[in-house]
Image (tube, rainbow, N blue to C red; front, top):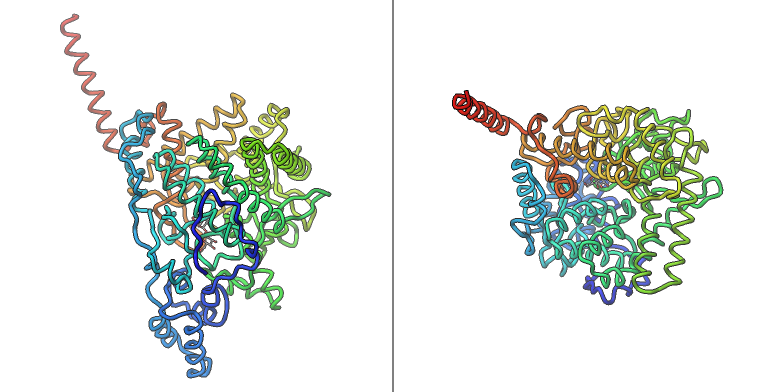
Amino acid sequence: KHLPEYVAESANAIDKEVETYNFTSCQIYCYGPLLHTVQMAKLFPDSKTFVDMKLKASPEKTMELFEAFMASKNNAPTNDEIRKFVNDNFGDKGTELEVWSPTDWVENPAFLNLVNDPDLKQWGMDLNNIWKELGRKMKDDVHKNPEYYSIIPVPNPVIVPGGRFIEFYYWDSYWIIRGLLYCEMRNTARGMIENLMSIVQRIGFIPNGGRVYYWGRSQPPLLAGMVKSYVDFTKDDRFAINALEILEHEFEYFINNHSVQAKGHDLAVYRDSSKGPRPESYSEDVETAESFHTDEAKEDHYSELKSAAESGMDFSSRWYINENGTNIGNLSDAKTRSIVPVDLNAILYWNAKIIAEFHAKAGNVDKMAEYETKAQKIKEAIQAVLWNEEAGCWLDYDLINEKPRDYFVTSNLAPLWVKAYNISDTDKISASVLSYIEKNKLDTFPGGVPNTLYHTGEQWDFPNVWAPLQYIVIEGLDNIGTPEAQKLSKSWGHRWVKSNFAAYRDSRAMFEKYDAEKFGGHGGGGEYGVQKGFGWTNGVIIEWLAKYGHEISLSNTGAAGPNSRFVSLLGVTAIALIGAFAGRFIW
Ligand SMILES: OC[C@H]1O[C@H](O[C@H]2O[C@H](CO)[C@@H](O)[C@H](O)[C@H]2O)[C@H](O)[C@@H](O)[C@@H]1O
C-alpha cells in the first residue's frame, strides 16, 4: 500500500478500513511455511536476523520460488539448502535504513548549563552526540516498494533504541522523545510522533515496533503521553488539538481489544491478536511450546508469550500463574491474558485524562466531560480491584484464581506516576507505599530497584533494572509530593544517574538494562545478549541530568572514576600545600 503523508491538519482522517489492514509482506515475515522452514533451520544466532532481511523479488514471486524449492527437495531440504535459498532470495538485514544525522541537532543544549559536575557535563555532551548514532532514515525504495521489506514505512526519520533494535519501538519512543526535547531537537521529536500518528491512521493502532511481524500486538500505549510531552515543551496547543481524533482512536482501540471484567469493573489486559509463534523469536517459542500437546494449547501458549511482549516486559515471572496460583515457574506458566496489570490500567487512565485536557484546550466541553468520566471510571476500577489495603500498594490481579498477586513488580507503583488515585488519599497512600518499599527492602540495592524480586533468568526479573521502570517509580514518588516520598525519589534518582555513569565510565557504553546488585553493572539474561545504545536509557539520564545536575557531585561517591579521583587528590594536595605555605606566614 502506498504511504499517505501524515498532515497534522487532516489528522482526523482515520482510514475506516483500518481494522482489516494487512501488510503484503506478512506472508513472508509474519506467518506461513516459508517463515516456519527458515526459522526452524536456525540459520542465524539471533532469530530476528532473518525477519529483518530484504526480499529480492515480490512476496508472491518469492512464495512461488519457495514452493518450487520445497517440491524439488521432497519437502525436506537440508539446512545448507535452506541457507542457499535464503542467500539467493534475500538481501542483508537492515539495508533499508541509512544512518541519519538529525538536522535539528545542537551542540550545546541548554540543559548542560544545569549540570555542575564536569564529568557529568561531559557525559551529557556524549549522550547528546549519541542521538547522531541512533538516527535512522528509510531509503526511498521502502516507500516505493514496501512489500519487499518487513519494515513499516513511516514518513520521518526515527531515533532507534540501538543494538539489534534497528527500528522504532512504541514505548521506548516515549523516553527517547523526552530526551530529544531536553536536547532541543523538537523537529525530530515531532517527526517521530507524527510517524506514530500516521500508523494509527493506516493501521488503527501502534504495533510493538516498526516491523510488519509485530502487527498483532502493541506496547504500553504512551502516544498520548508523547504528544503531551511535546506540547508541554513547545506550548503548541494546536498540535494537541489536531492530535485528538487519533488519540481517541488509539484509546478506543485499546479499550475495545483489551477489556476484561474483574469484580464487576471494566479493566484492560495485555493481549495479542495474531496466530503462531513470535516471528522474530520463532524457534524459541516453538521450543517452549513443546510441553503442550495439542495445537490449541500451543496456540494459547504463543498468545500468552506475545501478550507478554505487548506489555514490554518480555519475559518475567510477573506473567506466570502455576497450577497452585503462584508466580513460581517458567515460560510455560505464562498466563498474561489472565492477569490484570496495574501499569496498563494506570496508563489508560492517563490517556483519558490527557484527551480530556486537550479537549479543554479546544473548548470541547462535552468531549472533555466524556473523557473525564472515562478517566474516573478507570480510576474507580483501579481502586476497587488493584489497590490492596493489606499490602499497602497496587497489585496485579489474577483472573483465574480471582485474587491479587502479592509479588513486587516495579509497575505496582505506576499509579503514582500518573496520579491514578484519589488525591484526597495522598498522605495515606504515600505512607502505605513507603512501608511497602521498606517491607520489600527496595532501598537496599546499589544498582537501582530490580524489576521483580524473583531470579528466573528472564530479562525482566531480578536482578535486572530497566530505565523506563526506574523512571516510573522515581517520578511517581516525586509526583505524590509528600516530603518523605520526594526524599526517597531524589536519593534513588541520584543513585541511578551515578550508577549509569559508573557503567559508562568503565565501558563507554549505555545499556538496555542494568544490574540491581552491582553499582555500575549492566544486566543480562533472557533470549538475547544485553544491547548497547541505548535510546530509553539515554533519554532518562538526559532528563535527570537536567533535573538533578545542579546538586549531584561525583566526588567521594565512587562514581567519579580514576581520573576524577586523581583530580580530587591533586585538589586536596594543592589545598594542603597552600594551607601549609599560608601557615608559615601566619605563624
Ligand atoms: O526479540 C525479542 C523481543 O524484543 C523486544 O523486546 C525488548 O526490547 C524492546 C526494545 O527496546 C523493548 O521495548 C521491550 O520492552 C524489550 O523487552 C520486542 O519488543 C519484543 O516484542 C520481542 O519479542
